[in-house]
Length: 165
Image (cartoon, rainbow, N blue to C red; front, side, top):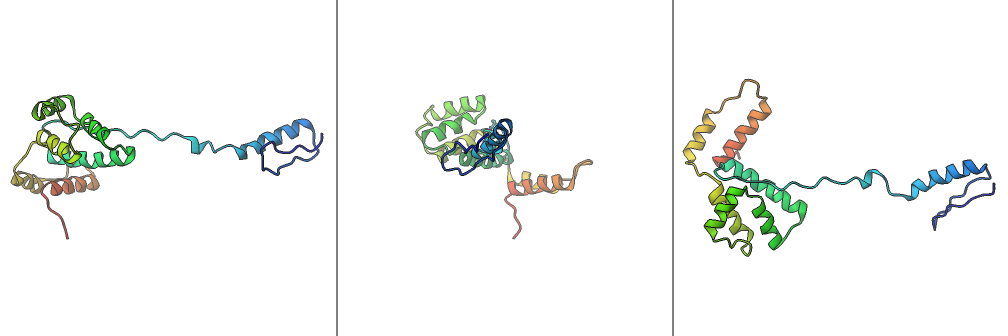
């Protein structure tokens, strides 16, 4: 069989004078260099929207705020869509109470006002001394790893607004 050139424009690949079956196999193999990699076409999983419930703790709220910031960065949502997505983060009972408390007009307000309105209803305020007492009374559970215990202690210290220099 005669020499066959690659059908893609700008490609200089040519087969040698071989049997037709071998030429076809070579061209099929070579055509893989012109297609995007299979791994690059893998889809990235969608980012899940964080959720918040009523009567949570300060620790729950801090965790929600971090997850919300990550969600905003990942989705690049802005404007009124941002407020709608933020309201969708609320559990149904919290959203109903939020609508009652604010008169149902939150979509036109800035994000920081909506977050503070959600926080008022979602976080059960507790005395700072209660949080400090919990911190001092913390003990490592029987089967708990030191890393998990350390994370719990750091989280509780964060609620107490304690930090190391």
